[in-house]
Length: 160
Image (cartoon, rainbow, N blue to C red; front, side, top):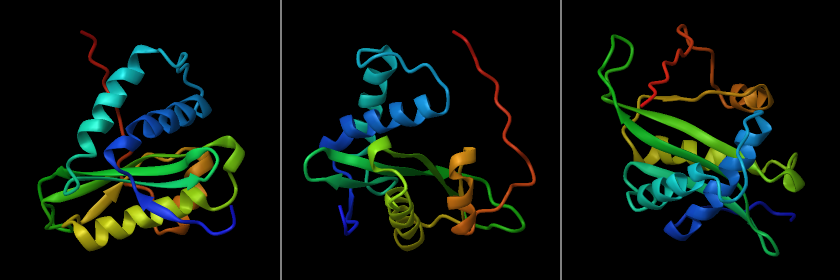
């Protein structure tokens, strides 16, 4: 791979997005199980459905001719109440940024994220884009203008 060619993911890329998500979660220390782990079927359904709604969801990927999809970044729109500093009613969420280990440190994730940021900026009404960065991705996001939020995320897991 010499020239980075980013393309918008299509519905038949859903499986590749699940694979990249598994790589990302594994790198974050999560036990992702094998290829038949139950979460993967739910993730496949999610990505398959979302990829059919291009006005509110986008994924950008890079292919290697011999391997297929090796990097990607995903984003979607969220309805959000306005604030004194952001009158927009929509925010973007950037997530699932991942590169196959054999293709890392080549700028592929950066290229995917930039394509996604262009989509947010040029094709959506978002006023802000949010993400949760790992330590590995922190420098990338900061170099693209992301800053720390005043209020760090907190989470409550609801078990059913």
